[in-house]
Length: 207
Image (cartoon, rainbow, N blue to C red; front, side, top):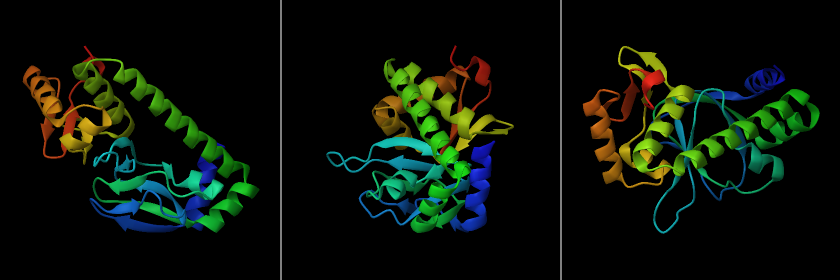
C-alpha cells in the first residue's frame, strides 16, 4: 500500500525517540513544529480546556500519524497529545514533512488514510453517543480493544486508560462509568485492573 510506503519514508527521514507515561508530546495552541508517527504505546488526544475540563477526543497508537494538519496548513495545534504509557515514535520536523507531502504521492496517501481513520472513529463515537451509558461504554471499549488491544491470557487487553479518561471520552461521569464497569466485571464479560481492562470474549461482548 502507498500509505505504508509513506510511513516508511517518514521512518527513514525522522528520528525515533522514547516517551513516558503522562508526557505531553504536543500542546494545543502551540506552533506546529513537527509531526509524529507512533511505533508503540498508547496516547490520548485531549481538546483545549472547556470550563476547567480536558475532554478526551480519542486515542492513538501504532502506525498513527499525528500533527500533520497543523503542519500542512501552518496552523496552531488544535489538541494536545498525552502519553498513557511508555512507547516510541518517530519525529519529523515540519519543513521536512511539508516537502515530503508536496513531492510524494505516498505521503499524501498516508495523510488521506489518517483523515479517513479519524472520520471513522468520529462516526463510531457519534453512533455510540446515541445510546445509554452502559451500551455506549461497551461500544467504545470494544472499539479501542479492536484497534489498540493485544491478546493476553485475560483477553483482548488495553493498558493506560483511567476511569476518568474513559468517562471523558464517552461523555459520562466517572461515577457512572465506575458503576457500569463493576456490573460488567460481575457478569464476567470484562476484567479490569489499575489502568487496564481486558475483554475475554470480544465476539460476545456487546450481547
